[in-house]
Amino acid sequence: MGLPPIGPAFRAEVEAFLEAGGAKPYLLGEQGASDGSFVARLRKGASFHLTTVEKVRAWMWKHADETAAAAMREAIAGAPFLNGAQTPAERGEDNNEDKGETGMNDDTHFLSTRKAANILGLSPRTLDRLRKDDLGPSYHRFGNRILYLLRDLRKWAAAHRVCLDDLEDDDGGDDDGRRTR
Image (cartoon, rainbow, N blue to C red; front, side):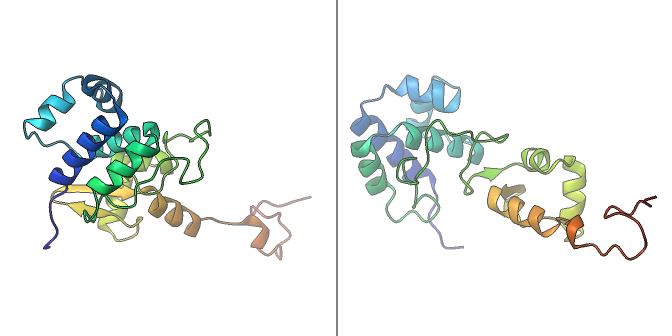
């Protein structure tokens, strides 16, 4: 693959947030990762699941002021999977905006099969079968892990929309195929 690992850049991003934003490490851990010792473990070289990294990054960017955001952008410059993050204000989001069932409105968040299936109203097993039959939404494979992007789920769902207004009513039935009197 030839791409650098995201761990060192993520650690630098966390340190930049803590230093520039003045946040307490345990607060970031408790609120961002649901683990008060998260930062201490990160500093000791622990690795975390991609979903935890995404959750912490989303929390940091949501709570970063302009100074912290600038420091974080500088810390992740050149990290291909981490570049492009912005504060909600820079993305034009309202912090009080309803973020729907997923708890997020950013299409760049990775979702597990279980969460993706929940968004689509499918069972995880059905989504697995659709993927194996090359009928499901686009996905990413990281080792043995399958993850979906929210934008890919939206695109796939839109492609499978059946618009009843477009169906012809040539059989005397209404648009959903039932007979009318």
